Length: 263
Length: 360
Image (cartoon, rainbow over all chains, first blue to last red; front, top):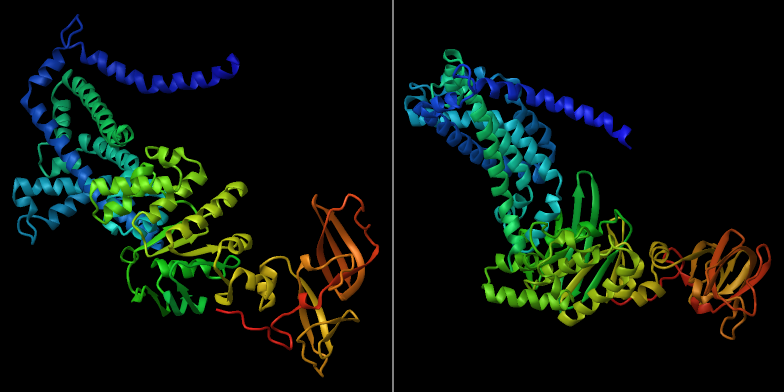
């Protein structure tokens, strides 16, 4: 028994070391800003920097907006394609995979050409407009992950029969989508949301070229100018991202939990 | 007074027609079964009534209202699916309440109606359970309650018992039937199981290749099948090849039997005679004046019943006798004579006479 467990244990240890050692090294380095002692000085400096708070908040808000918009776009699309146009599935899947093939730099230059201040839709003329454009760009970047997750989630339930059951009870398609389909693919939407969040928090190219005060460009800037603070930032970003995911997970799980305890 | 009228409904998917000129009128409160093998169009017909498929030709009326072009959520129908299709995210209570909420009823009214239905399906204690916590039979009863909750005009059942095991299937079909009688709801039931159709229905529509082969009461369908298909699909059929040799007399493998109502055919035409297994016996009876000789090909001892296969020339005759502890079943290869009444022989549609029209 013990012998058969040895192999898997070694694999897990090696994998854990691969993941944890750089993290620990970074953490150790971030603590050594003051020579000779371990301290949280680097963290204090980072938190004291108002730029940190601004850029991080900016990116979180952008991520949440991108998640909401992406879910709003992807869930009805995946539902409709599966229900009415199953033959279009491969086409839609291909379209949603395009962001993986086309580099973000191409995407952002395309955006700047399409939406510059002398175009028909001059989004880049104002800061607000550029923010909208940035969020739209994030939706595009996260499309492959969001669509895949949601589409797989829908594949796991019999959406056709559930829709027909709802319709035979008098419900409209919109109502069925909101009260039957969405709650049943919530886990899939959440996993798509996690990925979107992770992409947006560290995203550099779009934010930098659209000149928005996001966390990615800030991280890059600090990284080139400072020694210890980038390590502290990396640790903070890592912790906050994971905390956000845990938060989203527990928030997402709550309605079902509540329903189970009700009555 | 017809409540559901189906007029000349046809449905084609591309070049292949799955339904051809289907006509049926259903009275209010009637229990109708659409019976047929898979691919005969019975589910398509049900889905057209529900509105999930659109008819290529013809029209459907419910309560005098033409619903042919009406979307399913405007038809006021209740539907039960083979795969239950309960909403997995909702409790039993909320599943049954779904249609009532959609209809915009008040909270108190919904709670009253849901509990009433849960009493009806005898599951009032499971209101807070979720579908995954229920057995198949319980899920299907909840699905039935959910379909009945908004008091639909017609209840559509799409093979609701197929996914259940045999014992529950029998008890649930009795439950469905008594519930249907109690509520007086017009019901259309799709099945490929002849026993279900025979035991539950007021009338059966036997379907084959997109057409209604015969419409009649279970008694008519079983005892007076109008075609070889109906005879073979409903119950066990013994199809015997016969030749008309005179008025009321046919020859089966050279042995003459009396066939009432058979017209004399000068051309000595071949036709098919049907004989139900339960009308044949090994021992003579006064009314069983017809007899046929043959060789016993196979004997299956099934307990209370002994099933015997007899070869008569080119045909085989399958029949049952009750087990008798005093006399063992005849051995294989033995010669035997079977007895049956002339009236038990049915000339199928391809024969020279047409049976009396089954009332519709």
